[in-house]
Length: 269
Ligand SMILES: CCCCCCCCCCCCC[C@H](O)CC(=O)SCCNC(=O)CCNC(=O)[C@H](O)C(C)(C)COP(=O)(O)OP(=O)(O)OC[C@H]1O[C@@H](n2cnc3c(N)ncnc32)[C@H](O)[C@@H]1OP(=O)(O)O
Image (cartoon, rainbow, N blue to C red; front, top):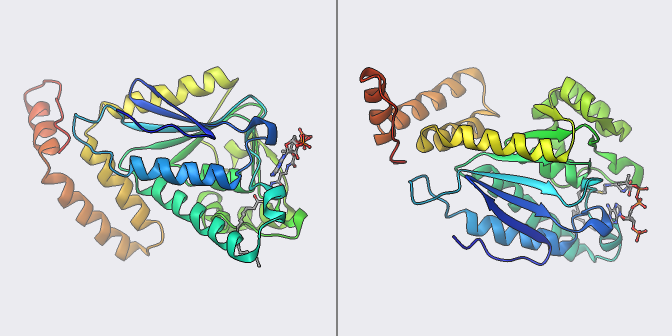
């Protein structure tokens, strides 16, 4: 499977996982426009990823090159040189990247290997969930620059940690360590180092790869839809999602395998 080659990204298949490494260590993997363009191109290729057995990739891992920085934010040097139109285009493009990650029918894990600041934290929060190495840190420090989050942090941080904590972190621009990020629910797991971080992410992708692909795709879509709904509308959306899942071949196979006390072989449709 050819996922393309990119100037600023390393893309490597590892078993069921596709490892995407942002490879701009000289600038702490800051999101230069070239990086955003490459992420946009790659997520465009991945948009065709399917759930049937032909697609060996059952999950994506996003990480940063080196052991200091995941992504240190938008590229400030570049942003300073942008005219308003270019800046708007840059922002819109990154919005599209985050929405495409959320729309993929497979899990996307942010393997945060260092600084995840500003746009870096925002990229990580567009993934399904975050794992971090012990040296990782997180923050939306835009207020230090007279800016505000611009790649979705105002929306997704409050979804992840609640409005009160989101307000405090955004107003203070504070950087928090991995252990604190775990405590407030921004991060699911903290691993001792980068090797353990990637191993844990690959293990989780492999675990999910054993489940019904259509069910995982279905429930990811439903969780996105339900995120902003009240309970009544959320229950309606969940019911639609359940009916859709119940009618898949994966579900027929899964429920028959339970009765037969055998292991299901999901067709992915
Ligand atoms: C009219 C206009 C309309 C506009 C419409 C809207 C458009 C919206 C488009 C933009 C949206 C952006 C949204 C986003 O939320 C905004 C941001 O992300 S702002 C940036 C947030 N990040 C930061 O503030 C972190 C900055 N970096 C640091 O604090 C430190 O570098 C560090 C990460 C803590 C590491 O510190 P050190 O270990 O000391 O390392 P150095 O600082 O020496 O860095 C090494 C090297 O990397 C370069 N670098 C680091 N971060 C960035 C960066 N974010 N951008 C560019 N370059 C970076 C640093 O300059 C060093 O380079 P060198 O000096 O060695 O050349």
